[in-house]
Length: 526
Image (cartoon, rainbow, N blue to C red; front, side, top):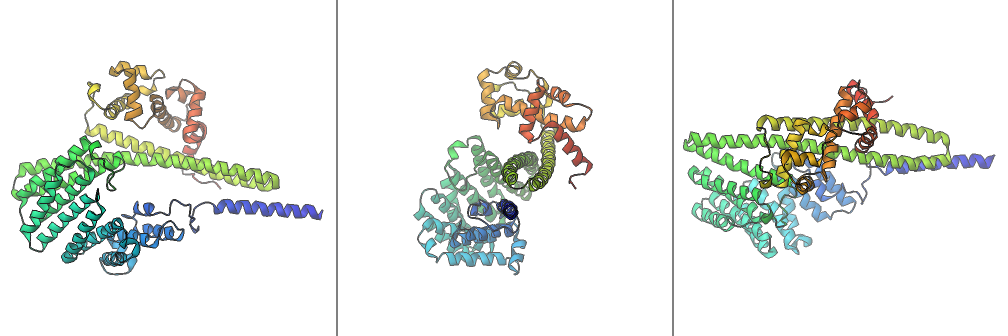
């Protein structure tokens, strides 16, 4: 009897230990960072420092604690946060000082780093530190310091070699701008002109980026001396090079650390600097009294802003889709975790098993409701994006597919398929597109495998049908699942249910129930 009591106590203690280990293995508030955490890295901090400087600094400190980052490298990250964050007042407030105390702090950190052995022995690390320090001196309006550090940076870039040579050219333009600021206008302009001339025909991203910065510096200096007519050709040069980069991105690929890593980031880069160049031209035309040219340039800016809004809608839709996928993976991990705990508890205590299962099931139901809400939000942003696109762009008809790239042709065909709801036809498939758009079987396959995010036409069609089905589930409560499957273009009720469960981690009936509860405001369980 005594042995049985001890066995029960031992089982209960084992269950508690399993639960504690399980909870302790999850990240959350108050949790001690672990070395295996990918959250605590310099890259994670650099991804958010522009708008969340305090959180970025916390990540850097944690990365040092867990051994992911050396203290000197952490100081490089801290200096970049202080010097380049867009939330300057927040950073100043964190340091408890007056305006721009963050810049003084960044300068002090960089000057200390330049004397550190890990930096002194590595020209590339010196380059990183001097780039931050040069920028900081310029932001502090310390022209002498700016000029001094720029000269040092040029020398280091020459020692690093390769792509760093273009960073050296960029810095030479900075020196030219500093000389102009100090009153040595002729010498400074000559130095900037020499840099721009050397970079204007080079087809690499590092050269393009350096050319843009050098051109901007020249435009600012010219504008400060009311030489607006001379800024126009420089601004046009920026636009011409960006247009060439957009049309022919491959020759520009050089592995530079500044180069955008995705198509979306490349588009954002082009849009940002093109809009700046168009703004310079608008200001110049306004100052010169050329109203017609000014209005034309302003319309270009307006069009760029409209396109940026459309991209923002689509980016939000994509972000929510990624968030849904992450939540689905987390839900699968939670269910796997639940099974391990359940097996342990079955061997120990049936009562404790029942309690844990009830608690976990409640958590899964709540997560299902969150997934449903996120799916609805994603569809809403997608509809906003499509509506914005249809409002400001005329309806297009694919007339010359052979002259279009795969991604261009996919966007045109996708717009027609969605607008006409062609995917609702159960017989919709490759032959439909071949007949409708006069395409070969191979071209149809390439459109989706190379020109879209979908591997096949089947995956694309399934995604559209499932999105349409989610709307029917909520907006038509009188329809049963079989009717919704048929209305959404699925030829088989079972196939529809299987695909829906795979996509949303729950069957259609649970999705409908969870969505209605969210709609009624009952998002928590008692």
